Length: 121
Image 1: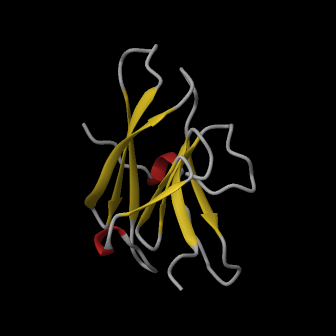
Image 2: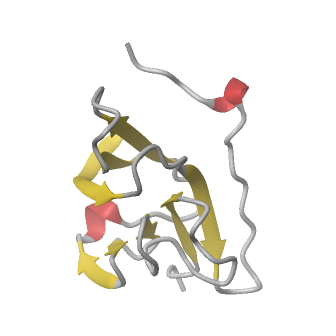
């Protein structure tokens, strides 16, 4: 099935056995098209689902105010924005790209090296 992969963002607070979005300070987009935030599933629809060969992007925007604990997170599938939402994190917390699988027969390639990243102006 399609639901075996979740990509997202998390802080150091995410336990290794938790998927992004299934703990505070994390968010995830499942291959099935569900957004997971604060342990709740939000169905986004077919345009948010992804499969083999698709490209999933995550954009994080943190305000210039270092006191803010809110970050804006946007997910893209094949270049199209599917959702933008805010996530509460501890002030000045580091956020990391995160990928999780829950089927053993899935192959995942994660591009997260500086040479793989694209920066918008």
